[in-house]
Image 1 (cartoon, one colour):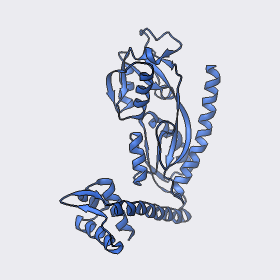
Image 2 (cartoon, one colour; image 1 turned 120 degrees about the horizontal axis):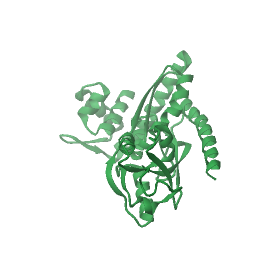
Image 3 (cartoon, one colour; image 1 turned 90 degrees about the vertical axis):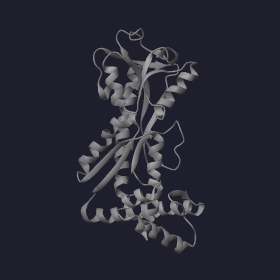
Image 4 (cartoon, rainbow, N blue to C red; image 1 turned 60 degrees about the horizontal axis):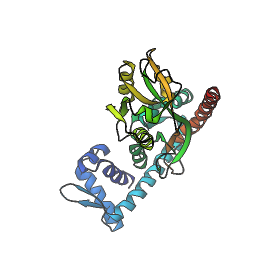
Length: 307
């Protein structure tokens, strides 16, 4: 029965019978027969069918919730038993918003030192996609904003606070300033993330509150693309302060803190709220708490230096 519940989860993920069957490693007739068997056992229609997938019925949505819970528990059971036999091993699937993507290494690196047999997949996704992937059991954890938009039912560990600065060439009129306001930033042609990114929504909101609109001359869903353009000295951008230290700036570029307001947003690790949590995710969250303590100490030291 567990494999048939996996069929339902795959259909919810793919929204296509053929792709769901491929994801499960079975033929489409086998997948359809498995779903029909669950329907016959429960005595309800779960999936609306036509020549293609048309969605879940109300009963199907409820069964899908149970399927995710049961499959998650079975995976946790298998990992728990496997850990007793071989120690902590497995595959961690992590997604992060672009502004937090470089910070994944702050957790995976010490975690890898503790558990060298664990493998990782790291994806760049929007905040909304991360929550959806967690709900669908497609990833184990994500790095995203904690205090700006609703998170829903997740477990969360705050990691660090994100503060914004203007990255611009030394020749720019604001480059010699100690700070720059959001209203002033709006007058500069900018490189920004695309509008589906929460970071961009934050920036747009602050500019609107300052009575201005961003002049985005270049948009991308990749922080590397934005930094590459800014590093040429021909472009400016609004970036989280912490990333400027990770990527490094050329001598021609200056980072100027943006104030009025001097806003900060919390980035953290999120995972599904299910109990019991898998041993692998549990250990990863403990590592995140250790990293958060180190990052907090760094931020506090930086704050004292600024004052």
